[in-house]
Length: 310
Image 1 (cartoon, one colour):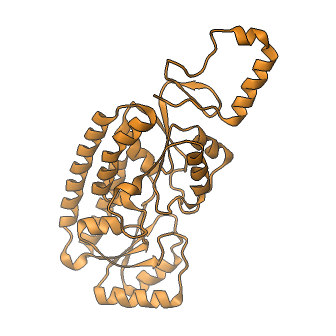
Image 2 (cartoon, one colour):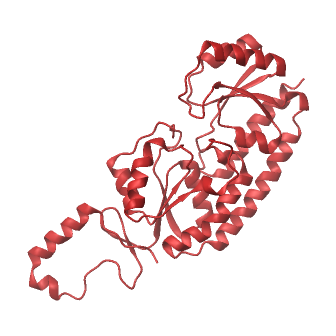
Image 3 (spheres, helix red, strand yellow):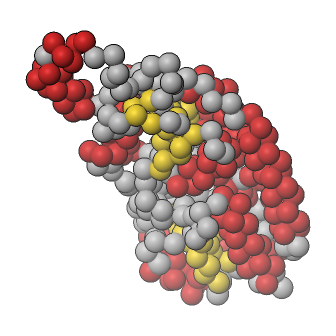
């Protein structure tokens, strides 16, 4: 059953109205709100018919939305294409978390600026589902969504969490989503199978493609920004080491993330005679689906590697 909760401001407003109405309000039998109907409360105190699941990032939101179908309303906090490592919530975002029936976070430090607000919501009784609790974690790396087989593990864990928090049964849509993810995984494996063995060493903008590389047989030679965050610092010593490693491994392609400064990457590819390819690793495509996101990401990478493989 959807939990009923009123935000503090809405609760105070209700108390004022009740006080003004006095005895008449106490005798009313038609008051609105949560009861046998099973509807919950929105952030502004209004009733709602479906459970509300709040996801932190657009990609996580797309994954969850595909898995729950029409059983719940999935809302996303962060703007599409924004840097989740640096994003900070507004007062409205905090209110969304507080009024949610279930919060879906990525975990492993991706939502650094949201941790205080999520912790407060959890302390206030909001269930929190952490996606990376259900994957084979690369130490410290939160970017699990670049591997559909890891996404499938998260989807498989959702029905129990959603039922416990909201009472909604998403077993059927989640099972269908799992089958689609398996098909995507096989499709992407076929794409990367076309990449020659001599072209499988890659450099990335920051350490965001480890799950994809491990799944599809690529070797990560290094990253322009040697950090799991896109905001890491780059030293001259690191760049020299990276250039030497690229030379030894025969790296022909550097994949950098859309939105990152390209000056350093441009200098590296010029020195190494490599190709620079930009990827939207943390942004959904126009249709807003995970399937299109991962398909386009994989095809852009596999095509670039195959075409420079000699």
